Image (cartoon, rainbow, N blue to C red; front, side, top):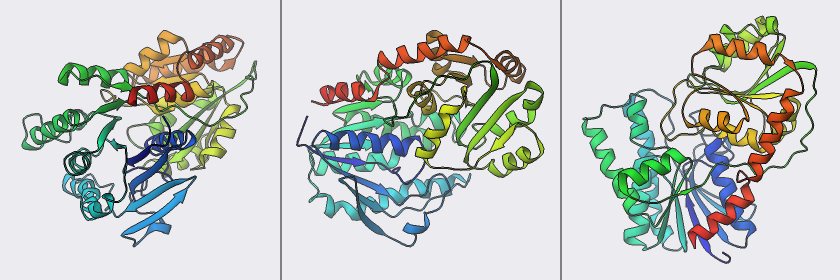
Length: 392
């Protein structure tokens, strides 16, 4: 596929940190590198802080160009509030900005419109514009299942007006899409079973290359976590429940979020816990090669969602410690690329840490399994070529 015009609609995009932003950027850059023209229609960056970044404050609209990608940024009202009304206003603010952007869309031609499936109401509005008014081909990109995810998180009840309304919107989105990309096997199964629609599994695989060095065997075990520091990850609780000094394990933490101040305070009073704050992806990728294991915790699994950090660890051939449930646990245990402990089972987590505290040559087998899995399909370029065939 070459010389095509592609518009990508996503509320998330760099300079925001997070899996969704880099997933969309890597997707866009993949098309550009193969001779296509890409436009990104996104919002002013605000994730994960819940407020517009300083450079973009007080702006209604901003156009940029980065690596031959045209970026159109629209106003939103970000919010981290737990108030469902404020969250709803934040969710529809992108749709409101998109309404005023409609006249411009007539002049931004495209062969394909790739639309991020979340927020659900925004994707509904964008599909409506592109399909019904502009008559463009729709590729829907689904990373989690709404409103089912909201139901599992307790945002609304199953028989509520909100849930039933969102289910109708979900059905409209799927049925009016020409192609559907999904992040996991679970989402693929859900769409097939619920709507009898086939989809393409497009995993959030990294592109970045680093020099992967051999692990230092017979040495102190070093574990790291990098990502959002919120309740759903439960890093603060792990720091409280696990005595890393007694286990003689170093635990290094990178990131920011609601628990960052608490984690920072714990790290000052507990030996062998190191909090490094939020750093750039490039700097992080150069540091993680010095660790033996990557920790991926998830307190409450959401059906269909898959922790993108696992894909990164596979890419960088770093053995995985998964503290959670769901499909991710199955992938890790079946392919023997690390260890899995059920969510909130701190006793077995401590037993596992004790088992791996002295790094020996048993880690070689895990590393080899990671290399083989990467060759067998967890490679960005191989996946992207399959994606192009699927789209055409």
